[in-house]
Image (cartoon, rainbow, N blue to C red; front, top):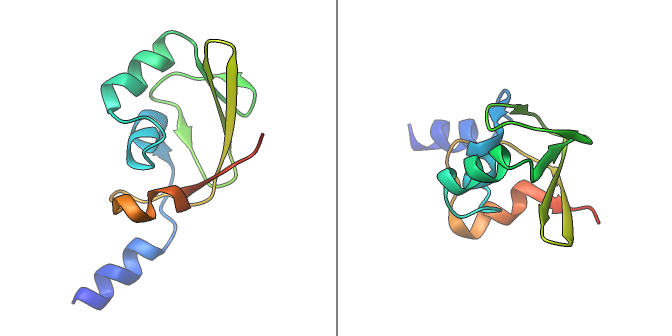
Length: 95
């Protein structure tokens, strides 16, 4: 049973909400903060301003603006639950 669960989490899932992805991947610490960042227009997906409910999929590029600093992340994997040690494996920094 446990092996099946591990295989299931290793597989790529369908699309996920942007705010949840930012929280699960630990790019942003809390989901409410991720929602606020989206509402203020600080988050872009594939070059377009994104709302919290925007779906992200593997290969998408998420750009976050904080003041003068811009950081872009490419979505590598999607998962509902990830251990803290494995969270950085869900994305790679692009710029």
